Length: 222
Image 1 (cartoon, rainbow, N blue to C red):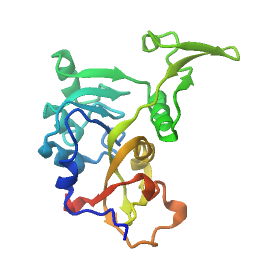
Image 2: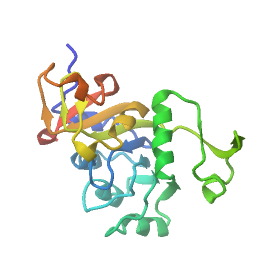
Image 3: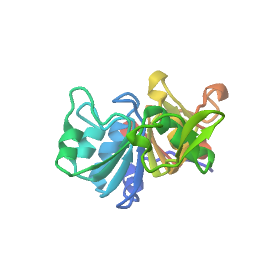
């Protein structure tokens, strides 16, 4: 019987090795799997590369992960957040690396990984420092920059509901990067508010099919 629900998330998170690349869903604090992130901190994987829209905001979740010293590199679109100087302080001190990716490119590169594409051409960033050292091409009179897919070893994702097969639904803006990250990671670990009976989710409302999910944990079990 397929059952991806776990009540022992610690054993799953302890399988994350040092040096892993981890995608984290969220737009700021919206859709951020804060409890899952903080549980991972307790397991202590080091030298992590984290892919997220923001370099932390608020005072929990990703912010605590940066403060833990476990992250060596951030790949994100917004390294500076209102009311938060954690990343900036670490970056100025030479304690963390940054790869800055425009938000549209970030989404497209993650989507490319999930779709199995070798690379994409995007006009965003052409003629700027972001394009330095990268292949460019003129296609039908428009200039493009070659960008490679963003893949991850693990994705930590926030969703609303799941069944035991790992089918996921999301709530409003909390959906953001979760669905594409689930496809781009080798292992997707998801925190949800509710676990429902198999067959109770409307197929038209399932955004992430269970084939892209390996582990599900209810918030109260983290």
